[in-house]
Length: 347
Image (cartoon, rainbow, N blue to C red):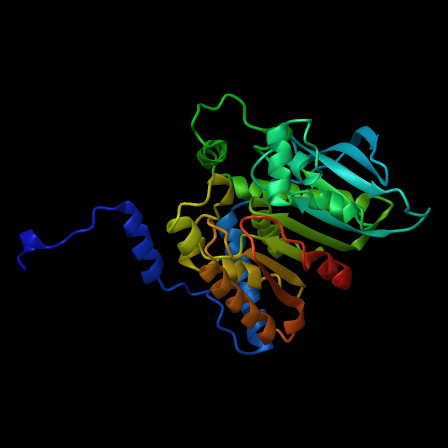
């Protein structure tokens, strides 16, 4: 074939896919001993921190309670606390009524996904039928399920969602992408900012008198799964996690299907590792992964491959019992078939 007849690639999508499959990622988990696992974990944790970029400056949380609503078996408080100078977090805190004086309970950070923010996981539908349908379709009310099982639960709004939603966006622009672009002008990553808010939410939980500061878990569906995975990998105060409908590979769901947004970008990560490697950083802490067989956004084959890679890391770390998968017959939704027993066992 002459040079003029050479087939040349013109597709940027194909370019990125080929790059994904051709790049050798040096931090792909390959340890075979516990010592090698610890060495890899230290090195890859540092790489992930570099990819995520600088965390915001810490400041006094200065929390205030805006309201307290009687929900029958629990109280729903609406709280406001500082995440960094000039940025506050608004969250619901669900507190079981049967907590005895002086008692300290395990607590859960309930991370919401795309949609209406903290309202969805707390089953607050404002009488709107589309919200009712969405909460039912995704089995979304896990914050309520958890408080009814005796946990103190915090459900924050992430930046760009709920009461922190971007105003003035131009349809049909994705607000996550708009906020990511705005952050990049300052060298600030939206995912990192939200992970920081999650960390500050853990700090707030630890300050509450009814919370055992050493028994904190994190759960989340979809973008909530993204938040659970990255926050737990970066904050060892979280002792147990449930990642629902997210563990996969960037090659499959992001580059292959375009199923991601500006709130889910760890810049440069694919030069060194993939999502399964981030999940492996959670070990030896307990991690449960939920994967829907019919999830159209996160292909089950890639979820199985990623889970197998994480399972190997837990085996090498000597704690195979602390990793499990709930592969359920459903789509992109919260399962809960193993999650509540998992949290009870490890928290």
